[in-house]
Length: 120
Image 1 (cartoon, rainbow, N blue to C red):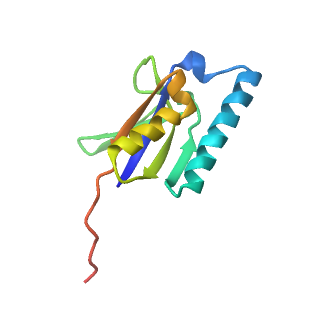
Image 2: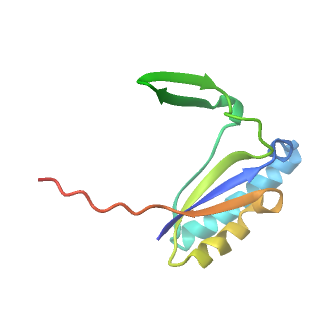
């Protein structure tokens, strides 16, 4: 089963000093290497800051695009991993190993498995 591990942190801790950044990146590299070697990693990427985001809505057939985050929030989505593991408990174990869990939180969410599409 595939699970998405969404990494949330506060904006203050999302912008560490250079030394903190280097330490954090080393910890993320080690975690990523661990799940690559175990064969559990499907995908994962850090995200640019929320100031680079845009929101797209369609209402009444009209598309609107707005800049930046949708709402003021105490947490920002900083990145994600998708892992393939047999149980939610294993996904939660891995989430606890993500360095960002020490200062923020990791949301564990199963991906919806879609039936295979038959071409005909």
